[in-house]
Image (cartoon, rainbow, N blue to C red):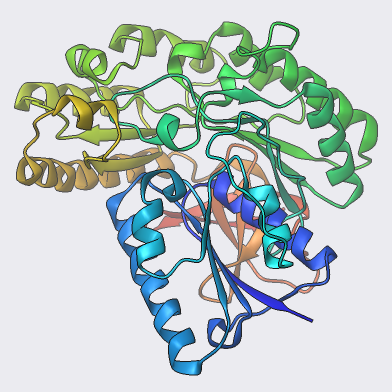
Length: 435
């Protein structure tokens, strides 16, 4: 019986795709192995968003190819994911046997079973992967509600690798959620490159806000215990008051959102083709802060893009402090071949970008510390998510997506929900106790 080794890079969408493929392979009789040297099949799920991730994949393909030559083993090396669109020829030159783009990942099993399958790039018939509970954390599950993106932000490679927005039928999503609850999922995350654009590509489909109401209804109907629903990632241009109301009022939808603003400069936002202004972003945040002054919002920021000036960089720092993000994912601009920016030859200064990123990271670290410290003394509802690195605590995630550590106990189980009191903060980490 053949085995397989799989490595995953990139976003939660990739993680969900990999988890789905792993489960499908095992149902088809394949055995997963942690040792690539003895694998009959090696699969790499790739990401093109950052150069570092691509370089890592190139190195791994070379390594796997060298290993099979040394061992004289007839191992198949398969690459899937976003790099299939950007680097297919290079991957094959380094030793990959087959490269499957996101439209054709479903036929990987056929190929591994020795069936020769003709793979046509962007065949227009994208099939969504079946969702499963997470292989490492069976209380969690991820459901892809859409694939691709039609926003065309100038710096972004996603529309070029995953294609235009394709929404999954809402009836299928609801059935997936119901089945995952039956399988024991306690936290379900809805995934998409831009979830709140959901349904815009289909005339007969609901929008994202209505989808949340449908999902919440099936959760309440089919679960005897609490089941939490999260989603990512959202685009500010598609965020409105109705969605804010749904997040706050629906019982299963967690009170948090990831809403990338990317830059505090209106000129930069226009060059990025983000389709909103700084003031419009502020207004959207106010919808959530009407409910809670400390409503947790995380964000993404890019510095050093194009000819960003020092004043425009400072605008980003000012907006970051004004709104108050407990968590932010910070990047300097990284040129990606195939993007609109690359095609137009957008100029940028890598050294300046690196310097601004360093300052930004330090600025956000201090800001996060101050904001999180305000949670000390408060109570929160948490789900036990994992064992902490010190092996003395459980890592919990609150309904608001804050990480809180609690002492380990034989009475506590991963995936269970408890009330905690936050007692202190150490090194940006909240520490609490079960109450």
